[in-house]
Image 1 (cartoon, rainbow, N blue to C red):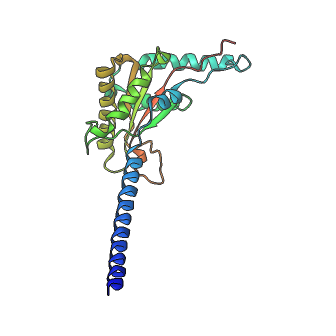
Image 2: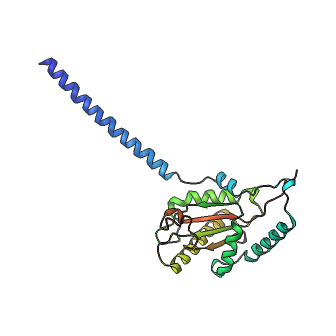
Image 3: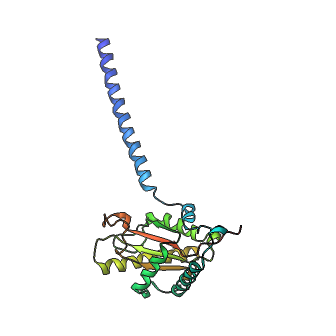
Length: 222
């Protein structure tokens, strides 16, 4: 009986140990998964790298027509500095978008409270990383576009207004906390007109703030 008891007791203990081990494994897996899911912040170094204009070699210096184009773009950018978001016409928004296609840019997932322009608490670290990047000494003299985008849920007027208010909220945060000049930050809203993934119009990737460095590419010094 003693041998039977010991065998039975050992079996019970082994079963309990296995259950504890499985439970611990599940908890560890959930913890790792949650950590990975929550670690979506793009670092200030990554933002800085994405927004740094590529230098041109002497053999690739701009042709006369390219220099004329850059001069026209620079004049336009100067004309919209200091403008309020709502004062931009649809034509000016389209022109900003067209110029931005060839400029250093990055899409950031900055979450806001539901149907609100209030930056969520979880997005503070992402906006802080952006602030550190934009105030890096190497970015001095640049003009940045903060373009707000939404997904396709809701009406056109609602999403246009929401995208503008969210771009303004990021600008307000950067000027208040990082002392950036308001004239160095041009805010524009596109609502749901510029979806990042048209095949999934309701997808979260469409809800974003695109940051664009409107500076021209710089010729290399050697």
